[in-house]
Image 1 (tube, helix red, strand yellow):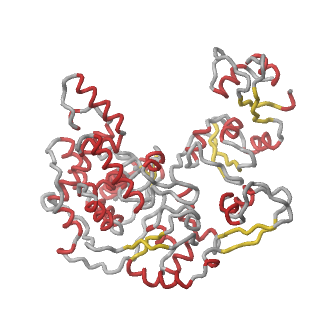
Image 2 (cartoon, rainbow, N blue to C red):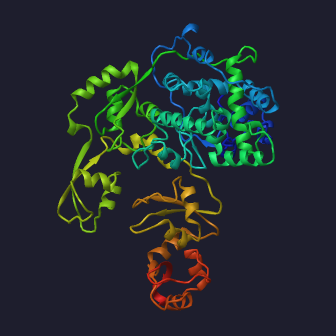
Length: 537
């Protein structure tokens, strides 16, 4: 089958959560290879089953022996433990038939699952969980630990940050536990166990709640009870996404139970461990780790997708997943590595105007790490003194796959005039949004981070302005330094009118900037955000 490169618009269409037939673009049907193109296009739609973005290409990880005999195929082990009853209804049949028509999709998902399937199967058995749950990452992310959604869910199990933290996942600048396969699998088991108990052992309701939230499912049950209606999954009024979500899992269960009946197969995967969790003790440069494991940085990152930067996180976790056929050599080299060789260190002389944030940005690290390494209790530093800075062992362009994931997680293209803005000292999203007359939440979406994430000095932001504001005029307006975003503390006797007059702004502007109504009374000591022209006050 020839490789088909789809235009960007088709790639974006692939990120929709449905397995139903969709209209195919004429640009595909009017092509000599129309049948082939349509098949790939529709397979892409299914491949992004949870409205997800796949920021990097799949990596073929060297796991050793590819020969899998039928008696030692993990799919057979899983098949023997399937217990869910699969109803023969229209919704399940629709999704089952769709998957059955796309063997290439099942092959692609199985290949992604191969390094992790034994581990997940073992963990489900250990916790006495339904074996059908091994299929849930297909529905969630097509078994891609790098997957992100515009709804801010991430990883193979598609955790939101709040839920992830609630179930023990660590998230910081260095590391995102939602992408860590081992950590997120444990969190998913804990979360699903909790939901199953919450819904009195009904796994279909637990799965619905995993998708749309326990509150929404509970309210749907309450409504049905009040109307004297049944409260099983099939009787509830739930969002279309959830009404499709559970049938997708059941459809995959039906296919795995009887693959011959539907003329499909699941790619054989060895029923044995192929990766191991290796304790590395402390922070380690990932390119150095890859060299010791005889892997490329892309291969190492594919097994350890939780790490965002050029090294493992300073505060942990201090482990790496390594292919079993590479573990002995990796451990041997790691044992010979001196602690001071785990990272490259640079002695940096502080210059006038430097701050910890400026230095951290320059060396692609964080102020917290610099403070820890240099035993600083505060942020004060003095020009002429020296700091010890941990840095990457190689040029940062060698670590590009890591940075692509960290930056591209959920970036959403906007409309209008596209500009690039460089973050300066003291900038906030609110400041930048005011400058370009756009919402701070939109800036976050366009650049693939959360509205509360910390901006870094020198960070490049993509901005889509509602009108053709030129880059030069915008930067000029910023550099002229006549506009200031300030905080004003309300004094006794102040009113909106008095403050507006004092700073030559309108009352409606103050209300908008602070989400106030002129019906609200101002309180002495209350802080207000104001955007003022210092030449006019």
